Image (tube, rainbow, N blue to C red; front, side, top):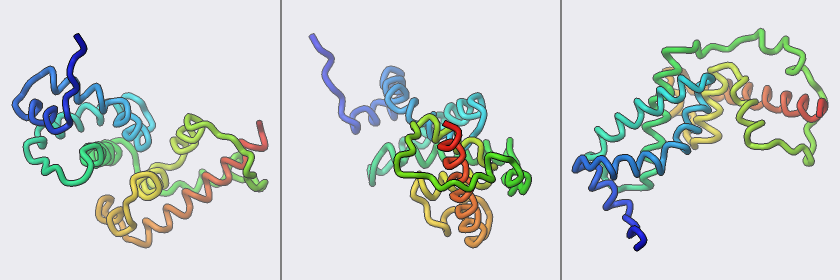
Length: 184
């Protein structure tokens, strides 16, 4: 006999009651996606896994306060992003490195073409090579949908710095995509 499907509301309620099986099910449903979120901010897999575990611990503690407003996945994602940012602050300097501009792969001048085919894994690798500040602002803005004011508040920087970091991240990514297209 097949196992009946549990709604998200029922699963969350079971987790709040402390039912381990429900907690495991929720973890299994979200862990892969949330690890990907953490990996976008943290270069080392071990650091991303630590952020994931700490993020889930916070999520389970905060679960009784979840108000079912908006997407549950979005709520969990926000917790994971915040945890990844905390790990990032502890592990990496989020400053601009001008040395990155001197690297040959950053100096490519060939424009990227529409037929440049990069796989998601390749794009993730390119994102991981950005300096921490660029990578963080790019992820928050382009992938998470935060505005520059929110990013500035989250990171303790000015709105202008957020805009500048995004612009520089985009330029660096474009140069690296161009370089990758030329070398393949």
